[in-house]
Image (cartoon, rainbow, N blue to C red; front, side, top):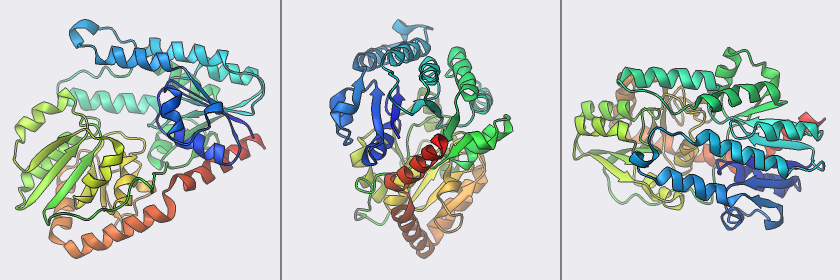
Length: 382
């Protein structure tokens, strides 16, 4: 089996490529990341094709102030440029093409012309469902949802039809695809893993009860509901830590629920996150739409029980009532109920934390993911 992996950016593609390389099945990894950054993941330099200048262009554009960028949305332009470039690097000596939805459209068709089977990676819910639920959420708060570029939307939907298979990470995502008429036989359902070498428990340095959210602070991540729930509980000797980049749309909520116990910790490199997890008591991801919250297995590997919504992919790896709890989206009372459960029951919290840690160590590594996804690839080629 010879697999070409194509990704604009990183996502979990480098972890996938490393697993394929371990099995002698990685033919080529095409990415916008520079070669030196990719080799840090253990990828053989000879198997990498870097279109690094596109990453430089994209990041430079992204950092420009809004008054310069105006209303221009160049996401589609960047993806098209990447996609067209990938087509030039494909030659008829591989069996399987794995590309990311949205960024691999023409290259997917080119791979098929060369006789390869094709897999589209979709880490979020079906594009139609994702767009509708996020539009609904933004309208609820009097905002306009503009993140989904119409051109990218069309590329995504068309790629679902064109690809031989669609790789998805969770039962939540699977349900959204089935609801849109995609046959189950076309879906490869394999949850992502995490790095057990990078995420593990460290000693907690105090006895303060803490809830931690890790990831972007945005409406999509449901931070507005977590803030309200924690603020209304008003628990003594308790804190909420928010780790990640903050969207301007969340700033009004932070002002509304301002408290010395709600602490914005900012962004940190991934190799520092285990300390933040380890200083907390429970992890909470209240997302409105999250195909698979990769922070969930990270938190579990650091020994935290998890509160997650039904729209995070948490149900695939968090055993309800054992490693944590699942709650409906937008349900502030349910969030409060589960937070106070952990607050009032330290023995149960410790027991569930230990279960979560064992679950991560037993079945949530990248090696576990690699075995499952490579097996699925083999079946396609059979």
